[in-house]
Image 1 (cartoon, protein in one colour):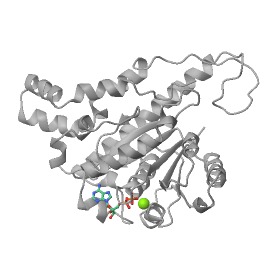
Image 2 (cartoon, helix red, strand yellow):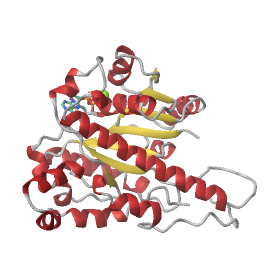
Image 3 (cartoon, protein in one colour):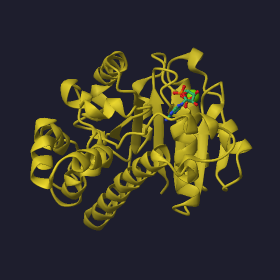
Length: 314
Ligand SMILES: Nc1ncnc2c1ncn2[C@@H]1O[C@H](COP(=O)(O)OP(=O)(O)O)[C@@H](O)[C@H]1O
Ligand SMILES: [Mg+2]
């Protein structure tokens, strides 16, 4: 079954297309997985990137979603595109600028929703508002929610010094990816190459981000395998997520335990991830560094993350 990733946010210019194109290239070339990119943006930036850059074997689709039609039309079309792509791929990455005309139910079609956001206060407020409006999707008690991964993008070295994510209250369970750094390299690579090949901080930060996404996918796959081995044998009716009346569902792994605990305990899942840890360690001896992480709010953040359900809903 293909792993379906939606890269979205309401704001332009945050790095959705850059992340989408480079993540798709990473999955194909580094992970050797059959990968499709669906570009739902009229600008076609991510699809153009992959078509013009040295070929890595990603299947690239630039599709139109009838967002102006409203109602269920965009979802039905999106489902069609996804089904077609998923039949021949192991990973599908979709690039979409979100608009309020899109019904939030579209997100349930995905295993993972990545929301790139810069960490300036004004952008964080916009992101918080976007997540507040879609909270019911990510905290749904009845349907299997996609995992929400916030990806700080275009982060400057200066911004690594402040922990915006512990200051800003987000109204929803989420995981936090290591930041992708702001760099001219990201602009220069457009149509020419891939961030995973950049031998500088920006390239390194992208690799850490991409590996974190792979880890989230691994968790998803392990949980899916668990569900398969524990699921009762019986007719499959209705939505994949709807528990059948009277039929017990596979038991959920406890949040914060097992594979999820391993992931949330990993410092690379904190907002400033290994970058800041490295910076702190450079400045201070180990014991002081540990205290600094506390002062910077990282443990509180990790606690908040441990509420996050990665594909643990029935
Ligand atoms: N990490 C980065 N560092 C510097 N510039 C970036 C980075 N990511 C994206 N950009 C630039 O920001 C602009 C918007 O990026 P893009 O990926 O098109 O965002 P979106 O799809 O959200 O509109 C582009 O000019 C792009 O080259
Ligand atoms: Mg774009």
